[in-house]
Image (cartoon, rainbow, N blue to C red; front, side, top):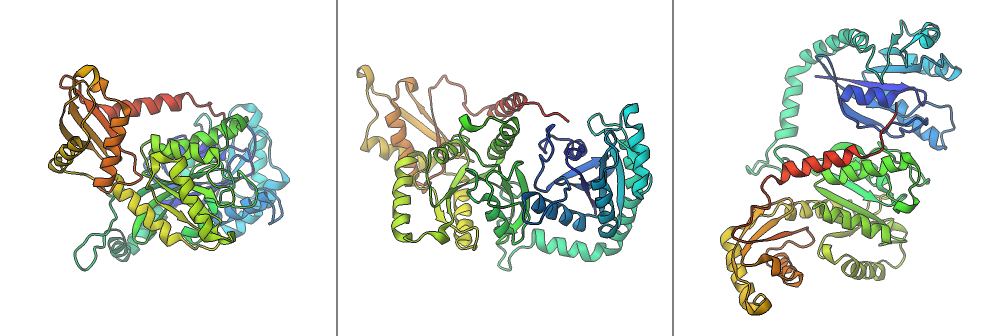
Length: 493
């Protein structure tokens, strides 16, 4: 059993920098300006041989409960309550502030295990702040530099006895806990049919919720979870990081990514917003199903179409969800208009699920779940080579391929090379001369004949001497993504 460690403190003391160092990845956004982190972000931390769950929190500030800062503080206090250990960070170069003293008192009352860390402790400029930290009454402070990795052995020494105590307690509870895990994670139905719990070799189904700012993405995920896990409010653009949450939704383990609202590129000027959008785009690249959330009052704006087209070009299964349906008065007429606009504006996704939901009331969540599972199933569909070639023969008989320069293109053979999304290869003569219109004819025929509405379909025409288009593609895509991420603005701190 691992323990959980919540990193708390004032804004701009380096909590996210330490979080990234402990998880070994650049998961949390980091910038010079204070208050970058707003939601709780969890990761698998590693320090020597210690393994634990580390929680990055929003900066603690004195604020009213109704304000954005007040709602951020509530989330941080919740992390303090549920964590086994709290790491309270101060800025050694600034010293102890009145706000630090207030929150030290709060931590003494709310957390059983508090470790004090004086961050930015490199150099003599931090000496006075480290000494001043003793006045908080939380024991000897650990002198850290999250940016340079200094002081981590001291943090390890402070965590080790606590980890041993949690391990002993886990050993006492092991028999009962082991049975519960078996039932929950691997339980088969009585009729012998395994639940849909292993979409990809036992991993949870990856879902990204994307859309414009203030579409209700965080509110929708909170309603699915049944708790206020993500920060919400009337302000647009609250979410900054792409935050993932784990849950079992109708018996299917899922990981849902809440992403920052994506505005038009021309309107994105601040560096922090650029980082937030890049984080959201990365979530789309690694998702299996992308839920494009629209506002019922202003659906299918230009930015909505760009987001949906991005998901299709990335080869993700797409579900379009129209939020705030509870305030819509003329529902039948509006739904008819939505379907017509969907087919007209997004022909590349024609047939993809379109559902109406209310993140506020929770109505329509059962339809959304069914749509996600249907889109994922279609995205994974595989068709046998025999079926494909019988279908291809019928398609060629009904509508023969063109004959440029008097020489007809011959379609010899077809097979499915991959799934996720479905990818097909057609062996033919002179593939370079095949017009796009005939390729679309074949793709549309595949959708209709094999029940693959809405999912991206990749159709490659290949000559006898051509190389396999899918060979080495995974390594190539991984290299391209790494190169793309390397071009993102570098984060300081």
